[in-house]
Length: 154
Image (cartoon, rainbow, N blue to C red; front, side):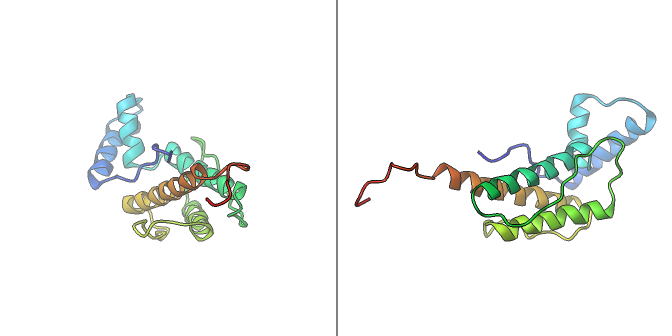
C-alpha cells in the first residue's frame, strides 16, 4: 500500500494558517500543541517534511534497486533542528526526484518534476510524484508470481 503520510493536498489557506501559528507560538517561544504541529507540517517546511520526502526518496531508490530498475545514485540527508534548508538542498531533492522518475514509471496524471522553487504547489508535486511511484511499485510487487506457481498453458 502506498505511503499515506505523504502530503500533496496543501492549499494557500494551509500556508496562511501555518504562518499565523508560527507568529503566535514559535516566534514568541511558545511550544505549539500537537494539532498546531500538524498544521505547521502541512503548511510549511519543517524537518518532518524534509525527512519524509528524503526518506521516501531513499525508500523508493532501495525498492527500485531490489527489483532491477535502478542504476543511479541519489544523496539524501537526515534533517535535524540545527540544519538550515538552503536552495542547494531543494535543488538536490528535485534532482533526486527527476532520477526516480527517469528510472521508473509515473501515471499520465502525475505532475511534472517541478522547478526547484519553493512554492506550496511545488511541494505538492514533489510528494505526489513520490506517492505515485510508490503506488506503482507496490502494485507491481504485489503481482509478482512466485517461482513454481506457473502451469503450462496459463
